Length: 258
Image (tube, rainbow, N blue to C red; front, side, top):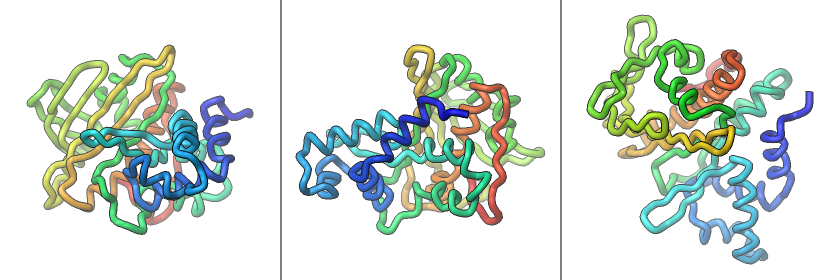
């Protein structure tokens, strides 16, 4: 079976050594500016570095976010997770598990405490919104949990499994089917709530689903665990909406999730 054009674009982006070096720099320290990333390719012009970053962004391997007047770049491991789910898990699960940890396997502290992920989903905004808010659907991709909320600003949001709350928060913004913001807190964790922002942007017959998780007071346990958990959740949502089938992934022993 031939790879989809979406994954073929990822392979093309990864085929260039300069682009791989830029991704390595973001693995070492996420959230870097263009000026900081230029240092990875000192022989290249600023325009050349920008072209490589554009190719990586178009392939979904990095995302950008504004921090005041500063534009920061973030490694997005979701396409790598999709490659894993399609092929590599059959042959090299232990090796790929280390790739799935790419987002948080850092050698230096991060300068910006947030995670930014995105994935393209061949569906309408309404279909994606339903996948986010329908408990029958979240059970199939969100680690078996059912979501419950009135989906209005100020209302609670709760993810539950077997009668036990696994995640809770409060709706901050709700603008169906384009934007949802809620606080994020694991019961029993002595940590202040963080924040998850879901943004759905139509692009023809496809939508860009972007998830930003920020508001961390420090590099908490939640901050570290969601780096692994969100790529699998977004991959599962994409698979379910596009095919109607749940994503089947055998997690290796000891693998960390949310």
